[in-house]
Image (cartoon, rainbow, N blue to C red; front, side, top):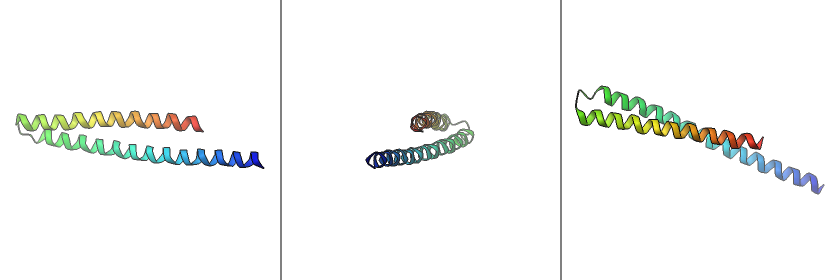
Length: 88
């Protein structure tokens, strides 16, 4: 029975770790959605700049930062999937 208890404990640890990885993946996906929202917002600011160089620069900066965040989010999701795949 000690061997069975040990297997149950390892199974529980894997289960908890998988839940934590799933929560992290969901959070990272929400970050990706927020980045897409900021890209849209930056595009709106860029389009409504009416030729004002400072507003054009602000719009471009928002878009650039959102794209960087989106790339980091996708990379993080890939890492979480890689780690989660190693468990199963």
